[in-house]
Length: 55
Image (cartoon, rainbow, N blue to C red; front, side, top):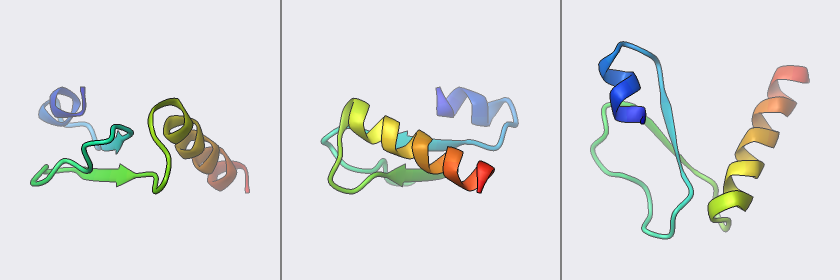
């Protein structure tokens, strides 16, 4: 999805939640949540966004 949104001109960040590790060589930011995978990593990333936006 990040590839397509980037192609359309959107500013994107891919949140990598799988066990394979970060995607190398992408033309956009790739974020990894250390120590967490799948739903836990996604939830932690969203919680961090909420905290930054609501301060």
